[in-house]
Length: 169
Image (tube, rainbow, N blue to C red; front, top):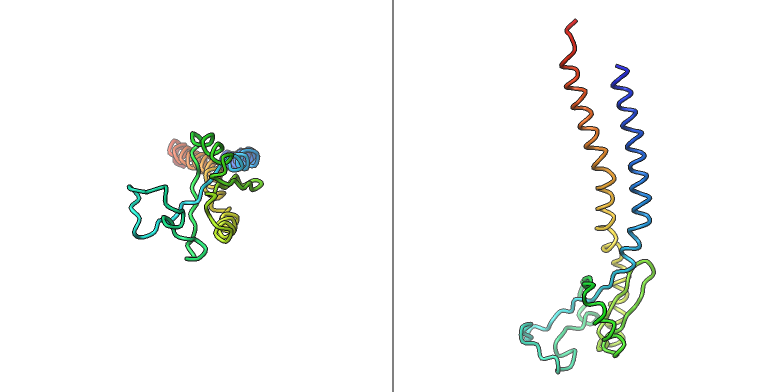
C-alpha cells in the first residue's frame, strides 16, 4: 500500500536526520567531556595494611604495592570535581604530579611513586583510553538508535491498528 511505503520512507528520512544530529552533537560534546576529566590511580595496599588505620607518616612503599614490580593491572578512577582545587593545591605543593593527555584528561599520581612505577602507570593510562571513551560513546549511541527504533515500533503498531478498520473484501 502506498501509505505504508510513504510512512516507511518518512521513518527512514526522520531517522537519518535524527542520527546525523546526534552524531554531530556527540562529536562536539563527548571529547570535551572526557578532555576535562581528571583521574587517579587506585593503589593496591599491601596485605598487612589495614585500610581503616592507615599511618600516612610511613614511607609510601610500606603501605602500597609497586604496580610495576608486581605487574598489577592498574585501575584508574575519576576524581570528583569537588576535590579538583584541593588536588591542584597538592600538585603545587609537590605532593602530586599531573600529566595531561590531549583529548583524554589529566592523570594525577602521588609524587612518591618511583620512576619505574610512574612510567608503568602512565603507559597503562594511555593504553586504557578506550575504557574511558566507550561508556560515553555508548550513551550517545543509545540516544541515536533508541528513538528511531521506538518510532518504527509505534508506526508498525499504527499500521496494524489501521488495517483492523479496513472493510473485508
